[in-house]
Amino acid sequence: MTRSILAIVLIASALAEVEECQGGDGEEASLLQSMAVGTSLTTGALPQCEALSQTDPSPCPSGGPMNTALYCVYNQACVTGGQVGCVEQTGCQYKEPQKKCFQARLVANPVAVPAIQTTASGSGTIEVTSDSVTLTSISWTIPDVSSQNPVIGLHIHDGDHSQNGGILVGFCGSVDLPPFSGTCPDAESATVSAGPVNGQGCDLGNAAQGGPCVDAKGTTAATIQGAAAEILSSPNSRHDFYLNLHTVNSFNTNKAANGGHPNPLGLIRGQLVAKPC
Image (cartoon, rainbow, N blue to C red; front, top):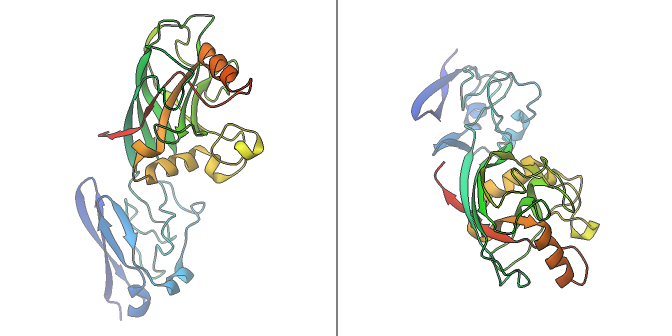
């Protein structure tokens, strides 16, 4: 006898919608336990639910990003609609795209970069989703920037205000630094207001591999999705990440101060501070 065994509560565009599942037995249905938390869904499913799991997005119809983090996303007997948070017959559960935004005020940092003395300044805003990291705006005032001393790199690095970490996300670069999405906008101009610039994961190897990146070459963490996940999951972006701007002169000055060896130090930098999107 067909009976209602489960209600899935979801949040989409601030509207709650309830889908009911028909069929199956009560024990199986009890394994799928979803509850709304903000605009995301989490589960309290039991380990036995793994047998019902479908986290491979390849057979899923298009319609939104998969919530692959849930190890139990459906009841085989449950048939619902395909909106955000709903469970398809295929076992494909969609989620609200996560997005966070940040700002960084760029100035010289004599603690982390003692070789640099400058009055240059700048600012940037950054938008992060599960699949992208975008420098939505970048501005700077750097008096000595010119065709002989262009801006040659903009990156998000791992570290706090006193640290010099590897590159997590690269936006642009030239000369001695990796190009990522290409030459930095208006790189030879002393005063700039530009953007957006798309970020790329740093897949050039970590320090142990002789590279400038945080993560090892060829790993998932070195992709833009891996970098985005690290930023989105950080409980304290101000402590964990900074935006760094490099010029030819700053690269050469820091290299000379490091015994002729290149390093990740730049001209001006600023920690990522969360802001409304």
